Amino acid sequence: MNLNIGVIKGDGIGPEIVTEAMKVLDKVAEVYGHTCKYTQLLMGGASIDVHGVPLTDETVAAAKACDAVLMGSIGGDAGTSPWYRLEPSKRPEAGLLKIRKELNLFANLRPAVLYDELKGACPLKEEITEGGFDMVIMRELTGGLYFGERSTGEINGVLTARDSLTYNENEIRRIAKRGFDIAAKRRKKVTSVDKANVLDTSRLWRNVVEEVAAGYPEVTLEHMLVDNCAMQLVKDPKQFDVILTENMFGDILSDEASMVTGSIGMLASASLNETKFGLYEPSGGSAPDIAGKGIANPIATILSMAMMLRYSFDLDKEADAVEAAVAKVLEKGCRTIDIMSEGKTQIGTEEMGNLIAESI
Ligand code: IPM
Ligand code: MG
Image (cartoon, rainbow, N blue to C red; front, side):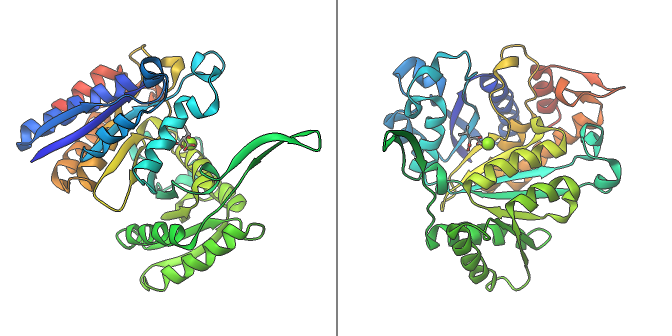
């Protein structure tokens, strides 16, 4: 198979971790008889430095022409980087929002899994995590507060800022269906998270989700208020299978969910539209503090690449091989610094990539 892949290395640790994921992918291609064509795409700070904007229309067009895009991370240190002296619409993050919107990547899948081998890194008490947990957050990604009208100006002489939160029933329906589809293939439970005791958008969300649920009698639906969900994630994470939620709540809850696994450097993510196209990126950020040091954990990017093989190319066997290779290297006791614990062997970014590639 010919895999036509766009590559956004991005900023911070992005280039280092994407390089390792490409190394592993090249090995997969060699072993399973595929060919990869890579198109390098500039986004975020890397694009600002060259074009003055975080994402050009040409890059969007080039991304659209690919079957899938593999991404590292974008953004820098907001306190020191010159990118953050630009107006908000020209900063690195605006590139990410633009590509999500332009490619209609409305379904953001963020798994949060407690790996047996990494239990020691989990900050929760053992009695809470006994038996592990395995949930996926299905976050709506192209609507809500992120894309509503916003403005800052004076009202009656008082400086006032406004962001608006809008959802229509179609936007809710399509993400809800995705959530139920995934749940039907997992443990068959959807927890829909909203703030229906306050927000109109949440009340509509609840109604539409219930309507969609009627089409999936085998899947159990429960509703949970977002504040309670934040609490339940640390109190009893095992209760969750699929968390279905809107953009802003999903942003916050997915960071929390990844933190309770103790290993954000391990967590992959996929942003999908109605077609097979997807943008695949690690859940963690660009970590400018450790960029260029060769110590970043490339596993989340490698596992995102595995998701790409599975969702965009239907190459399940190859995706399984990547996941098994990651598990094997962890079993051997090799760790990057972020998941290091006593008695294990600490290695760097490149060595981790090499070991995983060799295990394919
Ligand atoms: C994420 C990030 C982005 C978001 C930022 C960088 C705009 O936090 O992917 O979760 O808020 O969606
Ligand atoms: Mg976030």
